Length: 428
Image (cartoon, rainbow, N blue to C red):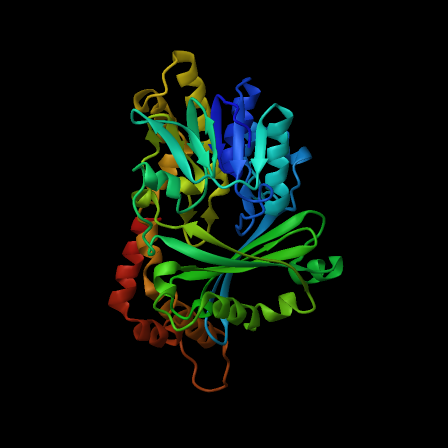
């Protein structure tokens, strides 16, 4: 790595890092992105859904240029018991309107966004791990990678969940295993006809499908399935703190998920293209680190910017907007010639006035709701019992619908269900 000095160094070539680099390079700033992986996106694992609104602000015609897989037109949420499942579906070709969402494969998509920043003059250095930060008089002034040192006016940390660099300079505390999850994902290739027959994947129409219940065997977590052009991204996510005490490993959970009667027919005959694992921040607003220090900003997963609402999981749109606003704060500080915490705090102010921190605050109780084990144990069984009672005709005594479903509700505990309802309303 060169001994040259840059105006700004970004640690991490994911979406937050490249959004920052794109914005800075477009403004004529000399910016270097240091990525640990052999290429941008090579070590990133997400389910694969991008809400496009924040990227559209950055690159208005990204729909025509980016390597998008499918436009999401179908939403599904399933609660799974051992032998069955209850699914809610919404299907509309106008889903999202002009603020549509898309499936992406991060390896391809992250490299594309990096190439857009490079075309504007950003420098990318891949395959390098940043070990530490240069700090002088309490201010971050660059990075240390092995024997190399690279200086800058300001550093943006976008190095993913469990940012050791943010911890070293006191912006983040030790990682709480109950606030992060481990995810496993497989990308499974299917034929065009299989995609059409199994998911109704016609033209560029796509499906986003989330699952909770049996696959995690009571552990906090769930599954996901997203349709790509000629493959599906299928995976499981479970809270690390839970997995530590579970008799079932995450690998076993994924296998159990794939073998479930709902999933097995959908991936039968498919070819495994990719297998990956990744940590995911799930602590919400109250688990976020400090976002600003003297000469340093934190964005994306490193800042805990992920929302899991059960029926929706978001992170990429938050990361892109955070990277963009971090760059804007640097440009503001650059004009003033002052990279102190006070001046760089315009970053946090911008986030507070944007959807990023507004949404993180709005749903700050969502992690507490997602820790309710009844969601993963009792709810799927109760719904299976209700549906079985509703749709069973036995030719014997007739009962009203209320009488049919009352036993399942009673077994679940009416008082407990009332408390659950209050918690859901409070969280969402």
